[in-house]
Length: 429
Image (cartoon, rainbow, N blue to C red; front, side):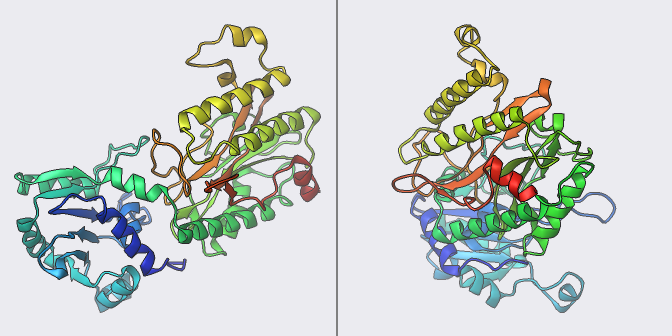
């Protein structure tokens, strides 16, 4: 790994949070992700399942975590099962966790090799009445591919049909959504690397540059600062492409007079950052472009103030819609007739601002968290309003990452990244 791991105390604390919500005589199982094949002997670079990572710090394939607070044997209260390493594996694949390093990383004393899993797990299941299984219940999940976790659950329920089964997802969504200081520090580090990327590309951008060249400059800067790379597939969209919300081709030449919408973020220690900035290709916004830019920035500034404990996210998005409606009226993009005749389920402002304003962020770019419970201190959100005008080939979105505080405005992890239109122009010139 390129990054410095978080402390074992952090992972121990996370397991305690999970245990506090477990029913008596229950155990919970968490599996690593697969290494996914491409074709031939090629694979996608390994990405760890965020839940086993959050509970143990283990960033390695073929690992299993079992939590069983009521186990009779103290060795079974917390157990890691790992792929046994060897000199051969070390030569061909590199260093893997041994039992001592796994304990140092996770704080878990009981570490078995994976070949012992069936025997040891059967002992634990003989005592347990319920099993917490870790299904993917993210609201935006695409579950067409069967994961290692899915296969395990299928075989588990077939082999142990008499046990009760409970869901880990609600517990994980709850505890992962409130960030500890170590997580905030890791996210800040990711944002600091993202800032370096911005500083690298602003003087680089000029008429004639290609979108993929900007992407290349960013990954260079991220990697040289110990990031694993982009936290998500970057969007570098100039001109009309900025109006395509999930444009990722990044294959167009940037033209004089266009604005580039750049949505990217570095990952550090598996924690994501998520930034959007829009800059003029030639270094100067036109008056119209600047007016639209400043309208979006005003919405963002006011929207951030609403991200406070007790706020309902549904109400938050309604209030942001009112802010955007006012700005679109000022820009002449909608009028009072549009508002009078609007569909309440798809207000007039949605023609130019069709997506949500905020999402949870953390170990995933779109992190887990409740969309029905009130906002809590420690929740981490993006704030990213936008205005998209296809007929003008102009798309503006501005986005920062925020941590909700006990009182007052949220902590902006990207406060030092240029955001004012005039400041961006000065840096580009």
